[in-house]
Length: 69
Picture 1 (cartoon, rainbow, N blue to C red):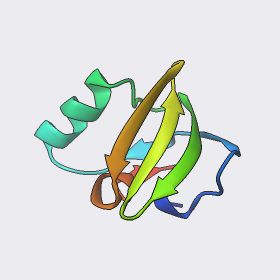
Picture 2 (picture 1 turned 30 degrees about the vertical axis):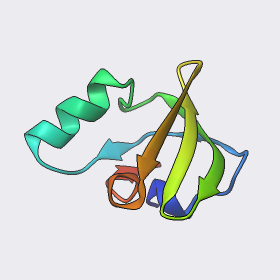
Picture 3 (picture 1 turned 120 degrees about the vertical axis):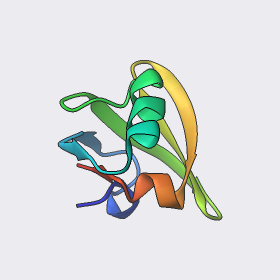
Picture 4 (picture 1 turned 90 degrees about the horizontal axis):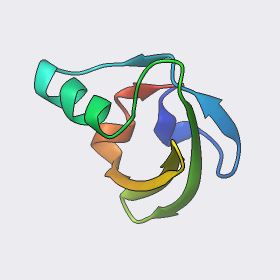
């Protein structure tokens, strides 16, 4: 399922990242890689705040839809 549909506070694991090369590279640089643990901390309007690799990152809904957990 897309990350945007995951519940807040539940540990998920990234299974796949969809999108073009630039998007994938951007997410990879932030630590979004297949197999990594990710937790949604909160949702604010069209953005979500996630914890990945001991770092909090805010991403928008369109990016969260490309991350499959």
